[in-house]
Image (cartoon, rainbow, N blue to C red; front, side, top):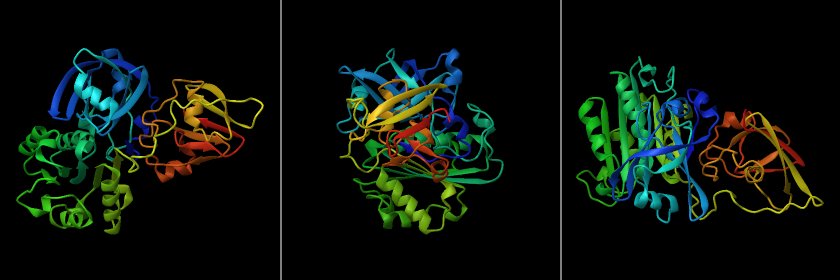
Length: 386
């Protein structure tokens, strides 16, 4: 997944991420292809698992002898003592299929400290204290989500609606069919609890609904009609977009054409829109010949310096090289999607192939995604602690 970042998210996003073993306390079936997994967070790790609504965690385990990592958004409003994520089975997805078929209470997985910038710009004074969110004025939030894109959105919606009677939240939620709708009962409960302040518009691409506006795939024409008919565009304080690349990009383009400032649009991608492209080079073996031409990559992590040589002909990512000497270098998706491997270039130059996670101001400050960056100067130094 990839997230846009915000000032409110600067502190939690920059917190050093680390994996901790957590026990699964419950597994709840959401749909035929999706489950909600609750992890118990022991008191001694409470500080490591504070989070803001909209953030995500990475899960790590070993399947068929190989380490596998996947990122999932936290689907519950902040509460101490637990972390909840929703895992939807992806076609051909090794981890999601295993989790849906085998994961049960009592199992233990490695869970990374929460991170991510898909959060409200309305500041909170402390993590795990959603009652402190600054929504004293009248605020309008709108979200467009598809499929499992609902997971961070429902966390944000629950939090801001509970924070103030001045908050209104509109949600457009796209799925193939009614049976695919995740958190259907929870969304209905929110509507019952906040009938005048929460509205959800279910759009089903493969089922006919009474309103043609809510039937079929969301394309440019339908999105414009939705905005004109049910979404209070001019009054919106923040937009939250979460789902596949094509939908998120369509929404961003449409909002930009209508004059919505980019600062008001938060987005998160679950895919890059390039399903046939390998994500990163994690685990790719690279042979280094000391007598040949090599890039010298230096990096700082947890206050310690590391150095590794990378063959110039190999076009190896900085992350892949660093992992060969420091297995604890942070990463989750390795495809330029989540931003976990973010670091700052201290010296030298790099080429970043893809970027679905960093904001323009971060790039201007020298931050890169190390999973997508390769050296272009003989020596490069990056800082994961920056």
